[in-house]
Image (cartoon, rainbow, N blue to C red; front, side, top):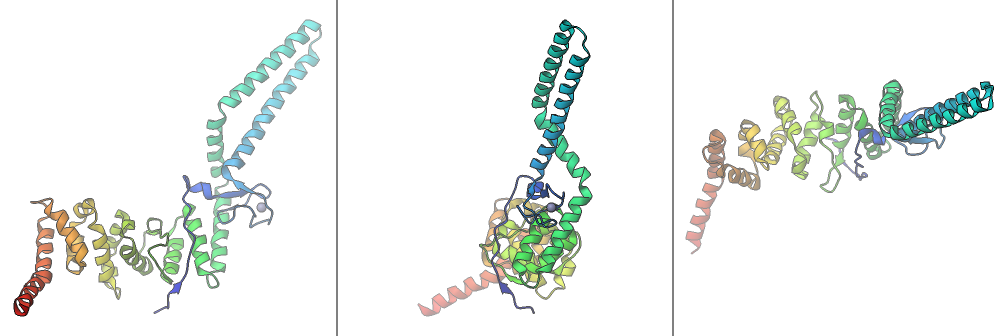
Length: 315
Ligand SMILES: [Zn+2]
């Protein structure tokens, strides 16, 4: 077994949109999620957010429209042959240019959204290339600084979500000593295929912070239950997840059979929590309730009887 390393990593910075983390270089047009200032491609301090990049492009195109309008006005004035026509051409030109500027001002925000969307569509391959470079950079320090490599992969995973990158993160996480105070992420790591590292990680998270166990993690365990059971501590992982699931009535309603299969391995507090929820819904969850009562009786009925007899003998 690999010796786990004690590490610390920065809390994950959450943003409103995934692309808020993306930076684009004003100089070479490269993309990255790993740097705020220095471009990893050209080395210049020319990185900016995609939003401000799009804003710059939009402002430029609006300025060209205004210039074109002013130029048309000048041409009209130039070709007008009498003073009154010069006046009319100039006045109309100025009014139309002002109207154009006002219209641009009014549509700026919606235009910016369209421009940003177009930028993403246009630079799709470039963004992908940038993110792949980011992954390579993380892989480059995998041995020397695994915690930083994990942080880097976590950032890339915000935008690029696929099984290999999730697998790599799960694998790294399994080499760390995890603690409750760490900002652990689980949902973004749930992958399509089976990974024993991810299963192991889910089991640890279920014990450290059961709030993080949500539907996707429970479904993952259900989907790969046979594979997880075949792992050395597979049943413990599944029991930890079932124990985390009983905190919500909704999960008990959705996965009663899954919880029933691991009721016998639930620790005391989880078993009590399960029985408490079940007792609030008499007539529901028949087989699960039977199992919970049975396990309780086998485990504590005997103990209660033993305690009672010990009390009896000591008195
Ligand atoms: Zn650059």
